[in-house]
Structures are given as C-alpha cells and as structure tokens.
Image 1 (cartoon, rainbow over the protein chains, first blue to last red):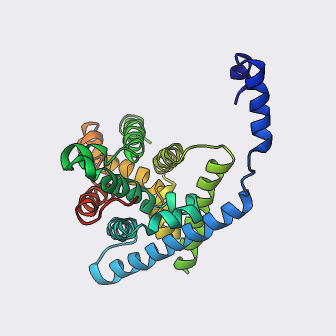
Image 2 (image 1 turned 90 degrees about the vertical axis):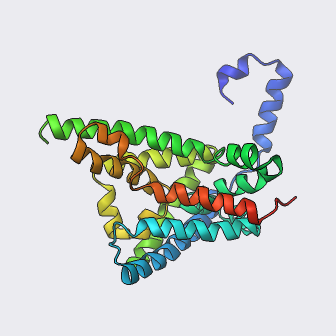
Length: 159
Length: 116
C-alpha cells in the first residue's frame, strides 16, 4: 500500500498494514521463474512440433504456420480445461501456462463452461470474453495506433 | 535446433510474465495486456519477424504474437489500400487465435459441465 493512502487510515489500520506486510509469505521468485520457464518452454516446444508438422504436410511457411498451430493448441486446451487439468498445470506453472496462447484459450473456455448455468446467450455468450477481453481490446487498439503511425511514416515520410 | 530455441525463447517470455506477477504484483490480465501491447510495438519496429524466423513456435505461441499478427494484418492491408486498410485488415492474420478460442469455447460449454 502506498504512503499516500496510509496517511488517511486510523493508527490501528496502519499498524495492521505493517503487520500484514511483515507476515506476507515471500514468493519464491527464483523457483517460480524456473517453473514458468520449464512449462512455458515445454508448451512452445509442443507448438514447434505442431508447426513442423504443418510445414511439412500442408505447405505452410515458417511465418504462416503460427496460425494453425495456435488453433490446434487451443483445441488441446479445450480438452485440458474441460477435464479440469489446465487449472492444476496453472497452479504449478504460474505464468508458464498463462502467457502462451493456451492461457488465453483457457481463460475463454473456462468462462464459457462456468457461465453455462446462466444460459447459452446471456451466460456463455455474454461472459465468455470477460477475462480475455482486455487482451483483445488493448491488442487491437495498440495495433491500430502503431499501424497508423507506421503507415503515415511509410507513405508520406518516405521511409 | 529450432526446437531448442523454441523452448528457450518461449520459456524466457514466460519468465518475463512470471516476474511481472511476482515482482511488480500485477494481475494476470494486466500482465497479458502489457505483453500483447509490447508484441505489437516490437512488430511495429520490425523486430518480431526476425524473432519468429529464429525461434519458430517460441515466438508464435506466447501471447505476444497476438499483438504482432494484429499489426501485421493491418500493415499488409494498409500497403494495398492506404489508411483505411489499417481498420479493415486488422483481423486478417490474427483471426485464427480469436475465432478458434470462441469456437472451442462454445463447443467446450456444450460438452463439459462446470465443476465445483
């Protein structure tokens, strides 16, 4: 908690804040990073196997094979999420399972399954992108800004 | 050899995410948003394509590739149609990630029941 906010609190609350920060369990950074590295690397390794498969069998290039790879990985994620295995991997791996597209897929699919009880239109349809929404929104917006700047530079700046 | 680099580069991007979780105490949504935006910026600077050539799936599987392909689609269309292409081409390349997530999300909701 920032000092600004702390000043407005009564003394008991301040004491409690200090007590809380002291008692907070230190996150084992190195161990977490190692786990994230291994699991994240392993997911990308599987992705590379799928990519190689698409390049040799379906005439994709190194640049375009990313798309079918992503789709295949998200399909695998659907199965893992449905059987409740992805959560367990996530607890172990932290960012290692959240950062690859499988984490994005898991966020979408898990909310879809969870809100099923509220009906298919308002439940599944309305809440599916609840967790993944920010990624799409700011991905699209930043891509828009960057592409506009680049186009202007290329077309009128003569770069 | 590309299998090795896919593992290492993909793993390192996940470590960056883990550091944002643990050191900067960001929520997963914040972390992923920052990674997507930085992927878009890297492609804007022309750095992401060489990374894909170097690391293959190590660069296309992490969520950063999402920002990269959004910019990529927009730029491809912009070369043909000028500024309006930025809007129309945005999802040209990215569509597979979003559409497959939505399609498999609905299929998943049909197949599986929520637990707990």
